[in-house]
Image (cartoon, rainbow, N blue to C red; front, side, top):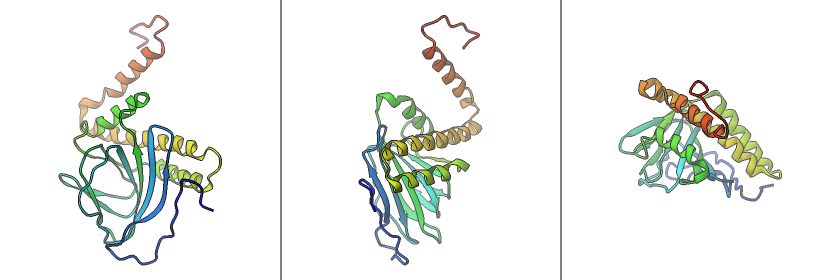
Length: 215
């Protein structure tokens, strides 16, 4: 039985190249900072068409297949890669592989005061909001998405909150992998995590004396 907020359609055996992508599920109204979660499968030969843009952050996890993303240049999206797309950036997609392209689209609301740090990390990956970031695969990503799908399929009480918690774990795992890759490419980024921990420590202990050695 389909639960409220989740729409499921069976994947067709054969789909023309110009057909609409098959919607796996769409969950709206997730707790902030998430806007919604959309799972789609795209047949061999599928192309999205004209470039488009969003007013939210979009993280696209490639569960299987090979995708190609067009911005100001072409990006090849391998299985287990996650693409971080900033608000306002024009892009379009295509399936360039020989198997269906299965994507999980996580939409994150921008300018959420309680999640300013999260948006700061997203911007750090995307050079502000100028480019996409492609984060490498991580062993935990597929299992986390499977747990999200299982929870949504069951639709038990509180399933949206559970999905949001798992999505946050997924997002942080992806961002860490992406930032680690960026730091390895740019030595100047290595101190960032230590500085961030120092600020966090000062904020958490502002009510008592804090010495330089503590920080």
